[in-house]
View (tube, one colour):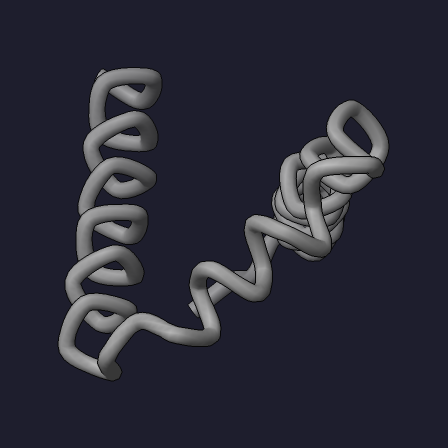
Length: 65
């Protein structure tokens, strides 16, 4: 199996850009948002994580087809 490391590194870089974007754009609101998320039950956080992963996989599928 051949791994295209430049593609993997580009994907990680893009993920870091998207992860950092809310902190850059809404720096003043992020502490309040994070406190709000910290009070949510684990099931809600898991559902948010699952929805995020499924959305990401859908975007990848659409872009690759």
